Image (cartoon, rainbow, N blue to C red):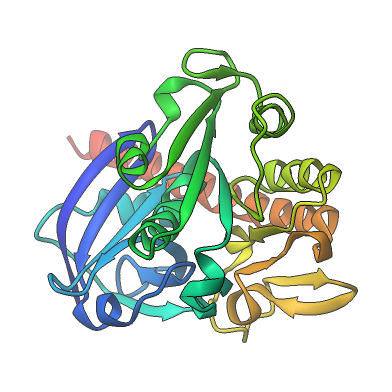
Length: 294
């Protein structure tokens, strides 16, 4: 049982939860994820680690409540417990293994979309702690859907915001803002890291390719089991089959078959929507029965 220490709504249907998990907090590295089960009969839900504190023994996760299982996770309150939290899982970000001399010669740009902003934060925080210059672009449909902007300002060299409707920051897509920074503001980067919706990562990759900019993407949204045993997270990387949960979740963006990955993601989304619809029907049926008993 893992105790919930705090819970906060960051935006509509997006919740931040902090749990006491000292062994995970001590071992976690940027880019890794955890598996959460809300209760003993709950589905295994992979969530990228949004922050960790080895001294306090805490791990922070951000969950977008879209399906039945994620709604169960965010319904838990402070002082309640998850059945279990397993991790850290997956491979850490590649930059963790570089020498400080190599890293401090590089300039990174991170492109975060929606909930993908949460897993970007520990990476940028780690790089800042090691003296690395990092620019960050955060994108959302509207300003009300932006998350982690204040946290990111504290660790990024420069923070740029893009909203589809122009309600805050740059009016347009993150790809257009990235291109503007390079072509109009003279920004030069050695590595781009994109985390967010699959379609966003695909087009960030295409934009980075225009400038011969190395690009990394995280495919954490594809994971189900988290151990490589279920095979649900299969993805084609440079023509070969890889498993996101054990070989990733981060990959060279130019090697990813995004169209295949989006088809697979759509298949699981449909199944989750069906499960949620069935649960709602049962809930409504239960309410009707209660009314009849009265």
